[in-house]
Amino acid sequence: MTQTRAVISGTGLYTPEESVSNEELVTAFNSWVDLFNAENSEAIALGEVEAKTHSSAEFIEKASGIRSRFVLDKTGILDPTRMTPSIAERPNTELSVMAEIGVKAAKEALNMAGIEGSDLDAVIVAASNMQRAYPAMAVEVQDALGAPGYAFDMNVACSSATFGIQQARDAIRSGSARRVLMVNPEICTAHLNFRDRDSHFIFGDVATAVVIEAQDSANCAGSYEIVDTRLQTLFSNNIRNNFGFLNRTDERGIGRIDKLFVQEGRKVFKEVCPAVAEQICQQLSDLGITPEQLSRLWLHQANRNMNDLIAKRVLGRDPLATESPTILDSYANTSSAGSIIAFHQNRKDLQSNDLGVLCSFGAGYSIGSVVLRAL
Ligand code: CO8
Image (cartoon, rainbow, N blue to C red; front, top):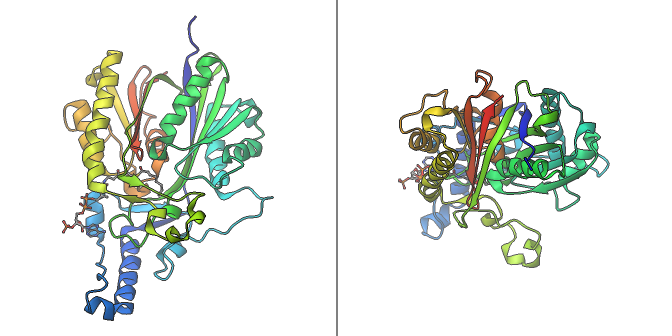
């Protein structure tokens, strides 16, 4: 029996209105450092507390390629006495903030695919952080869009979207759904420690959405066939966030920095780049696709230098800017949404039968690569 082919027929992007430049972020951080050092001057002089060090916009751009990031709340982040976004709780009768930004991205994706919410069979919300324990955000998004069928949330950190695409494709191939919406609302600033010099610049907020459909009933103009998906996980403590429902059962841990995002950035860089390049090269080789046949790499958007290294290993030469597009300069790392933004904004010039790879990598470790063919 031939399996139903799945295509990506639409994508959507919600970008918050406010953005924060490196210079603005560093000014706020350095004000906080000065306040901290003044408040702790005696303990610092006695050697009991370590003085904090200023951050630098030049370092941030050189080490990561990031120049600015979109955020849901700029004021709270840039207030040196707060350094956390202010996002008000909402009553249960209102759409939650994560569902709201997810729905905005979803509407654009549905529109591109030429379908309505009522045409869907399933909704997956795939993200690094969840609005709450339950009910699943996906059920809320499903309800807001008037979609029948089933919905569930899933979390594979930065690789949530590529893993979500495989779940959608599997559902279509097995016959349990024909049209799946996969949404990635990422409010990364809410779990970023803006007082940590090593990582305060890394993340931004955004939402993306992807419609995955059975090819035989999709409007194929502008669609991409999902030729192959490959997923890999390798346990590592180098990117971690210990926030969770058991935190309240041990008061000693409440408020500690491990309840926010923490990473060993250099180790992540060294360990993840070769593993990603190897996965993509092996996948292409198994499919009989040579690097010369690839028109585009839509890579996870964490670090410009990482992407240059991975693209170079995959292509066997330095990539052209158009071959491996960068969006992290203005969006920063938006976790699972990053490679989807790159795909959303950088595919219009591809011709029928052109091949590309959508690839994510991050905490877990997790690596997901999806080979796509323009129809
Ligand atoms: N300003 C000035 N100097 C600084 C700063 C700063 N802000 N920060 C560090 N430095 C200094 C350091 O002190 C160090 O100085 P010295 O050499 O004297 O010791 C020097 O700069 C170099 O520091 P690093 O070695 O840390 O710098 P790197 O070149 O490694 O760059 C990066 C740091 C940019 C963090 C880089 O390591 C990197 O990007 N690594 C990969 C990270 C990555 O891809 N992580 C993926 C995580 S995302 C993910 O999986 C999703 C999780 C879910 C997200 C949920 C939302 C929060």
